[in-house]
Length: 546
Image (cartoon, rainbow, N blue to C red):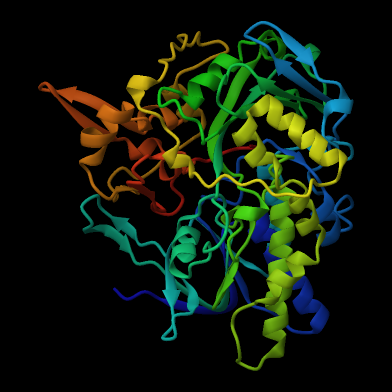
């Protein structure tokens, strides 16, 4: 069966804040110019917001520009930050309150909101559809299309109804070709098509090394007497020890709290398990007190891009552009990427609209996007925070944070730190590393991986090709196991990877149906042997208000 084809002015891949902001801005610019742009947005989740997971302390800077009347039109920002607290956790029982004076000014949350990013994206999706954007949830972009000159010509969605062996089932439906003059890639962190485009067009040549973290999050219903709407807590220190990272607890609306742990993927101990560190962290009295008599209602995880402005690739190429976390626009110091993602999408939309309005059939690369970026507050903000991530890697979390504070006092020290070592190359041999004895979960505050994955509502059609592809199936057992005790068993937050013993031999098993699409394996595997690709559309987690 041949694939059907549809033509648009612009195709957008990804229904997160960057892609949705780009879509809305395109429609605004089209209306202002008297030109009706045809825009299509595809989202691999079952609905807009289904795959969205973030802390989220939302800074409304970009939203103020995109929709100045967002309050009147019902944007779900109804929980302003009322308390902004930071603590250093000394050990599993004690903590030290960090005075506001010793917190970099860019980290303060005055005027921000503790929200569900999933709900904000649902609202943005409604705005986009109301403006005429064709929104297609449940369709995974599986392939980049190119024209005869090698320029991006759109994308193809994945085929449906293919079995694990690659054969067509009775339910087989071919994917669609969505062709456009410009394609915006807004897949989020470590987008699999963005990764291909960076390699194909050499977009990272001469740029700094990209770095990542993994963020794990839970949503809890808590006792009303323990709930403080708008209260925000951030912590550093225990339990991560030598690894860098931090944690958060945000009081949302409706007697709910969001809490999570962020672990820098540059860690060196292959025995470290981010999931188990998260479960252990919840037992600290500062955190556990809020959860007493509460009930966990959701769990999820995702990778976070954190290389900073020095690691940004070139983000335009013939026929397309990268926006949001697909390029790496997150502010490392703030650990906030929503307002920056939205602004990058808006800037790309403005550059692309300018090309479309020329209507001369000429150059299809929206190179003006880079110029707009350099002239924007987004560039200034990312430039100010450029030394935070490399500073944490070089000096450790405590001294690195002090360095970031001094950097903020002087509004940018006259140098740029770099870390050229990629995250997958930082592991030490297992035999030379300290084993970590994680406590058994109590089923009240701490839990195991499988019960956690259950709360992510993750579902994949079992009889489909595995979307976690091994370049060499022998590497996990022959190389990673003896050298690093196969760290995939621990860095994966969903129990996807196991080493099983059968008849006296070790076997590597991939439980792809558990995958919550965090992309950590694609990043941290020391042999770079695992490639994450999009599974059948609508597969993966179905997050509520995460």
